[in-house]
Image 1 (cartoon, rainbow, N blue to C red):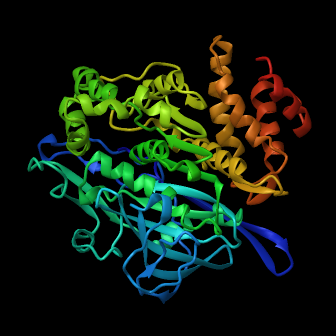
Image 2 (tube, one colour; image 1 turned 30 degrees about the vertical axis):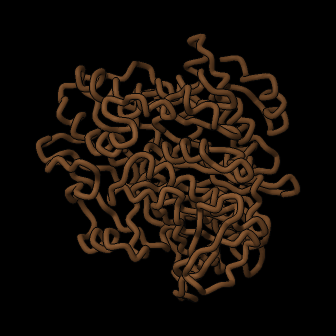
Image 3 (tube, rainbow, N blue to C red; image 1 turned 180 degrees about the horizontal axis):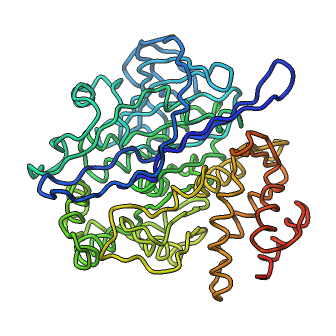
Length: 507
């Protein structure tokens, strides 16, 4: 579904003589969307939200290309026999390391494993696992439904990689209709590693979970692709702190993050999940995508053509329209399995996944913290195009990324960590907080912003300010923005005290 774009920012400042602090942000949670069906003519279903350059580091040498068994519960990859072994309590999940490689990141080397997961249903999922520098590290899972990979050894991945980047017929998905196209972009593993540099700088491990949308499969397959990192983490208990796992993704990647977390094993369940613009109730989404939206749109073919590849994948799992099998894919079915905290960013002008999805989930489930981008007027469905709203293009480093990275970094950092690192942008935060202030002045509830501001005011959080390339306490940056927007005069300590009780009164 429409991705919020890839933002990749690199900045550096002296840390001490002979060393440089290098931080970067790469949010590529979605990748490319399916393209409209050929019958849709000139329908415009794509919005470009970022022209930022890649932060891909220089890749290192391959240190091993021999499939290695990694399914033992002791966390060691000692066997070179490609036959997987029992994983203990999750015996149905088995994992094989297809290759190992080192990459340069943040001025040093990181070790990466390319993992094949053999699933309980007989299918396969694929993971890129980036080791942390020390044992017992927190883990961040990035769900990537669309990224192309060519290292699996499977015919379908090799075939799509040979076809090259661009739009191709959606022939590998269920019930191909001779019209639907999907966009394919091959991901260089160095690009994936480059998007992990904030996590690496914090000492976290990282896993990319690949949905391989282009390869077909059903909705249930994509969910199992998102469960695979949790099952894998439990096979590496010495390397990964199973109590400090977080996940994120956007749109269809947000769906993976959300439903994958709901099926995670209890002893490796996520502490925090950030699904951005995520579908959370497929019965309601069916009504929106086949009724409400196309009935009001000036271009109903654009709407139905966009959703077609998704509903073809959902049909084997849910039926279309969703029937008896859809229960687990509704708010009522999803809530009981959700662990930890959910932070749900959503733009009120999202045409693809309406904000009512997040409103409904927040109302139905506990421990859900919605985060909204209010707009002065309702979304005009008559003229709306297929985007998730403008929030991912607002500012040099859009506020949705600032909140996402801070929520994950602060929540997952161990209590003994003196500092936690992320990125920020005062002007981007101001753009969002001005909308919050407008809602406050209108008498609307804006309490949903307080958890995110408290994270940004955490005294441990050090942020690279993208406009200046300077490292600065996040609370200082936030205090300056709050003072600008609310006409106050807080310092960092004063702002923290204020946020314990609520927002400042509007000017």
